[in-house]
Image 1 (cartoon, rainbow, N blue to C red):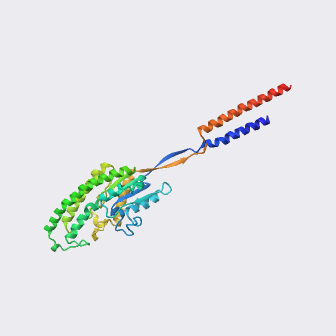
Image 2: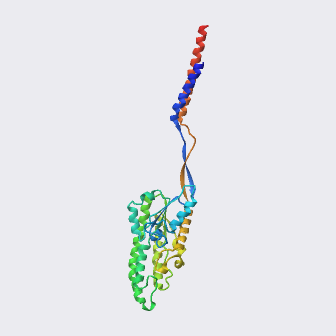
Image 3: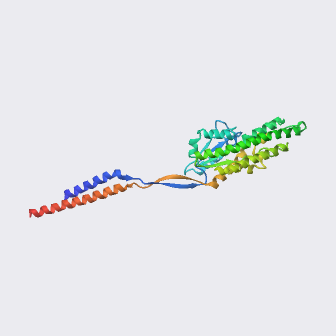
Length: 328
């Protein structure tokens, strides 16, 4: 009987050892909700790049207090200990809508776009504002926005703006086509939410020449209408223009003949983008692990082995009993 028990123990141990290859650690995905994107990407022009801010460099978009960097710092703290946060800024100072479209189509951004939760775009200013600023320079207005009203021929100025009207309208038509194509191309490359900012009017308070502010207001208004109308193509609108209205003097550098937002302007844009993110909501997935356990096959193997061992033991016991009877 001792030999039988020892034999059964060896059989059971062998079965258990063989079943080690039949174990598993169960895992499952858990979705966690968050108000802000774990990974966000900024595209577009000098506004998104942070041009004009202290610390800005075309080769380093991460050292100035742009709205992208303001949100990066904020979300790194907010998501610390959870999923973490990553921000990528691929904005290019001087880029117009066709430049952004070409950049997207080149495939250069594909890897970053693929796993971005949010893509924020600032584009359109260079499609038309460059034409306007050149008009101001042609009218004799200095880089500081100063000019001698007595030397200004208002009729010539009006004529100049009327001739420029056609160029601006053509640029706006093309912008509409480009923003639709940009939305379509991004939709192929990311499952993240896409946002497009409206353009504020930096010339709204150009009281030195009402013709300028009226013209600017009309054309930028059309551009923003195009942005809103094309949002049906798959992006959300962040209405930056609304929060800059009536505040261009204090939120931009227009006093220095520079249309870009100043540090305060970037704080306003950051608040707008943050509000848009929180209104959307995001999520991230983690993989959780359970305790090590036998697979279905492992359980069957162990169970079968034990049953076989019991049957074998029963046979040994029976044989031993019969052997004793024969001796008697």
